[in-house]
Every structure is written in C-alpha cells, then in structure tokens.
Image 1 (spheres, rainbow, N blue to C red):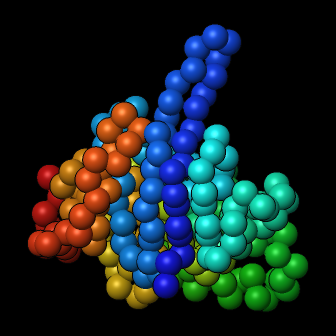
Image 2: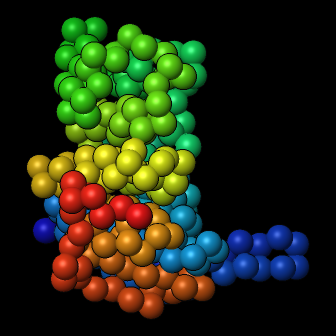
Length: 238
C-alpha cells in the first residue's frame, strides 16, 4: 500500500519580477515500510521536496496524497495535526533545546497530545531505549556527543509512533563513526517496519536505502531500486 502518492508537483518561488522553479513536475509513490533516499547536489530541489512531503511547505501546483488523504484539501490545522501525529523529523542540526534534558526534548511532540504523565513517561523512555539512550534521559542535550544528540533526535521523531520518518542530511554534522551508527539505526528501524525517507547529497549514503530517487534542476532524473544495498553495520561509511 502506498503511504505517499505525488503527481506533477511544482514549486515556484517568486521574488518581485524573478521566479525560481524549485520543483518541476515531480511524480512518484512511496510504499509503506519502504526506505527511500532522495539524492542530488545542492539546489536540486530535494530539500524543497522533503518540506512539501513533510507538510512544512505547500507546492504551487500538483497532487499529493498522504495516507489516503489529499493534502490540498487539508486546512492548516489539520495539516499540523497530521505532521505531529503521523510524521517524525530528523535534521542535520539536531534541533534539540540545549539547556533541557534529553527526556523533555524527546517529549516535545507529546505536549499537546492530552496523555497522562505516566503514559508520556512510558512513551519517552521506550523511544530512548530504542536508540540506546535510556540511561541518558536526565542529561542535558549539550552534555551529549554529536552522535548521541542525533540519536536523541531520532528518539524524538519516534516517540509518537509516526507513519513515516523524514531524515534530512542526518549525518551531515557527524564524524564517520557516528554517522555510521545513525545510518545503522535508521536501517534497523526500517527493518522493524518504519517507512523512512532520507535526503542526502552523498551517493554512498543513499545506497544504504532500498531505493534511490536522484534529482537535478527540480526534476527526477533517476528512480531505481538499490540492487546491492550497503549495510551500515559493515562499516562502509566513508
């Protein structure tokens, strides 16, 4: 079953008399449980595409169906609810609050969920355990290494049990070993059934996925399955 269906997406940014086409007729589907990498050089449109898929931005035209719902028919409030409940996000810069405990950072997506304190605690500790950080729950985020901070960000993305996880250059600020550990974790999550979309400019990182979409000048120039998928646990990160 497809969790995402996209047809002829276009995004045009206008600044006075100048228009810039960021997406130019993008079409593809994503199946539940798939691990898809979107790859391309800076300015190719991959981050714009991820922002639209993650309901952080709206396209100029086209069709986008998420989980059986037409995104264009959603109000801003409904889109925000879907983003909070159905989507998890991992960013290059971690986006953790620096003088806040890891527990409270991971709890952020649950704040408006109306859950009991006991249920929130259970969900946060479960998410932290899944990334190997349960023993760091009371540490401040700035007391953790870069790799640990990114794992905490992944725990935050997981805490609501989302339908899909978007990872935007998740290894960009990490050393090779920490990046390898993060990609291994993403592969493990995918093996457990999570749908993952990874945005990267690195071809070898994209080969950790099951399928690669390559973009150039706002268009898809390649969409193919990875025949010889690399496994991060084998130490293939350069």
